[in-house]
Image (cartoon, rainbow, N blue to C red; front, side, top):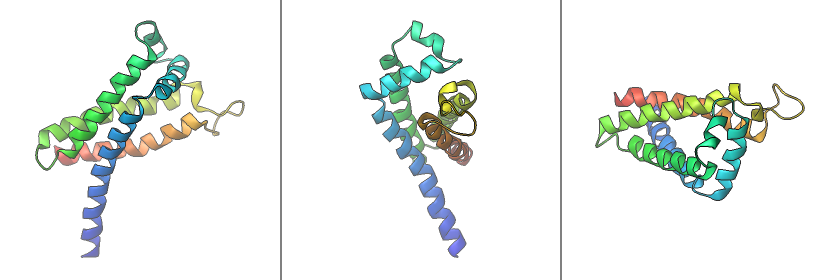
Length: 144
């Protein structure tokens, strides 16, 4: 009885906590401060540095912001739109895989001059994305 109740509460918090996190982080990316922070990250990333030639960090930040907020809403819609929630989970997984990949492709994640295992503030913020990726994978499977 207690086990089932805890699982239900845990699943609820897992899904809607992920949705809230995406919406909240998206709202934060609407600020210029986040765009400036993102610019530094993009410069240091071997995967994304080329993008700064084509779009500004503010434009990139807005794209990510609206995508994250949309994903958060899509994840929350599972009770009324299971397929929409599934696709929100798929997009969340893609975003988080890209984010987690920065742990391996950016020197910006390590605390200078120490390197591994000392993470910078940015590296510490990416570490949580591994757990969020697990939540997104679960939400996707739960909505399939």
